[in-house]
Length: 184
Image 1 (cartoon, one colour):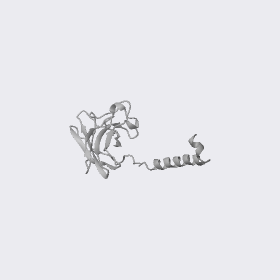
Image 2: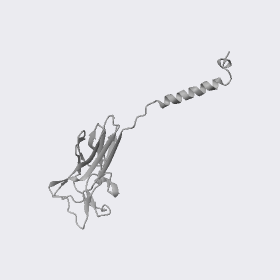
Image 3: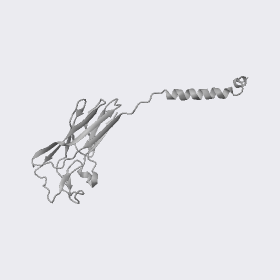
Image 4: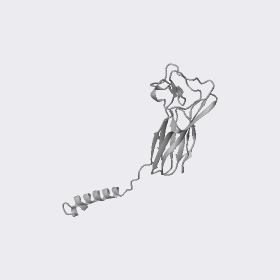
C-alpha cells in the first residue's frame, strides 16, 4: 500500500504547500548583515605652492578629507595613487608635470625630478602613513573602528632639486591624486 493511497484526496497537496511555506519562513529568519563600507570625500586644491631649489615645499592646508566607515569588522584603509589622468604620460606617474592650463605639455614637458609625497594626518582611532606617490596605491590612513572624521588635512611635500626647471609663460606643474578607500 502506498502512503498517498491512505491520505484523503487533496490532502497531499496541502502537505506540500505547508512544507513550501515553512521553507520560506525559515529562509526569512536568516540574519542579513550589511557589508562593510567606507565613504571618502576630498575637498580643496593647491593652487600655489612655492618652490625653492634645494628645499622641500610643504602644504598641509590645501586638501582635506572626510571619511565615514560603517559595518567594519576587520579594518579599513585609504590609499593614494597617480593614475596619469588628463593625458599625463604614465611614465611620469607620481611626479609633477608641466601643464599649460588645458593639457599636459607635449611632446617634451618639464617634469620635477622627485615624486610627490602624501601623508595622512592621524585622527583618533586612525593610523597615518607617508606614501611616495606613484601609479600603484599606497596606504596613507587606516583604522579598525566605525566612525566619521571630517576635515582631515592631507600633507603634501615636494622636494625641488637645483636641476628642476622654473616654468615660464604661465605654465604650472600639475598632478592629480586619486584617493581610494577599502573596507573589510
